[in-house]
Length: 281
Image (cartoon, rainbow, N blue to C red; front, side, top):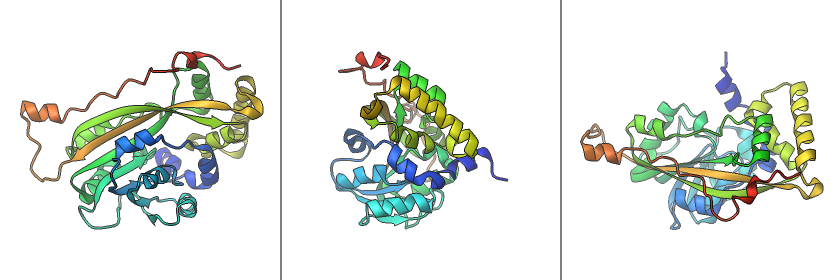
């Protein structure tokens, strides 16, 4: 019998179009930090409908996008017909060893069988290559955004892969950075955003309808009608260099310091963070 984690992970195909319409993109600065401004050979795992793929291609990278769900992948292929794609999982990556400069995962690493996936990622990365992970997380320092999270769920809000990467012993120096950006949502697209969430996608029709009714009541209270609203995000990024060696990681003080994960960067507090605390009514 399929467990809850698998059921949620496999729920996106049924909501692929809502996912594509409702999910935010990624800020360019974050994608540069995850990869580089110079063209690289990039493998993207769990590419979904191509939200991150589009940004990687725009930077000039040679991208191979993989996605296990055919409905999600079909949208990616329609959006980016020139990109090489494969319908495959992170646990069974196609291609030879030491092929990619960077492996990038957007909003999907928490769905992987990490033991199997990390072995495969290490296999296909070149010596000195990097694994880069990213999540868009709503900025719940803001009261109305926190209220939205109470309605729609926040299971991905506390994802942090540093401990998993440290325990694997395949990676050195897990670095992290946070970037801010905004997504314009209106009465229609905020419903798509919510319908694309796995915890909503697995509900029966009656329960989904009730959740949407609750969401729309919230939107009508806090939103701006046809003008919509700006939903703020903190884009959490992580990157780590691969260790391409069968030799056990040294346990000297220097090695321990090098293998220590950097604590996640504090959320940016520049420019407009003070005004974001306003409840928009």
